[in-house]
Image (cartoon, rainbow, N blue to C red):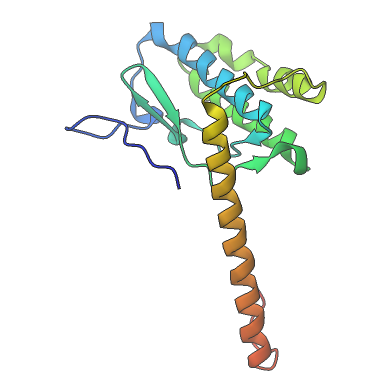
Length: 166
């Protein structure tokens, strides 16, 4: 698990949905978040539940959080749908403050670049280390899920197959 405190001695950083952005911040912040979404995808990662509730905002900067549902874009049949939903969520949120953003179709553009192999991670990118940690976390969660399923099966067998199925 990767943990980092965002905030100061007085308070933790609020989630983006709790913040009132200055109009001059809206477009640049939206662009930076979409760039992050594209960078995640360059590493075959899709958040899967990106919203203003899963972004911390502090002093003009942000951190995307809550990755347990993240998926490997290369190995998930729903990857495109999930990416489009993540980007659409951001366009809808920021579109309330900058209506022109509601009409953007960045998700499809990013996915097309990904499919063509034109979406590449930057060399020496710090995100690579973060994504490895996220992938490790996802792998641990998946392993725990497999172990829990095996324990449930073993309990059912000991009971002679009786009881509810998961």
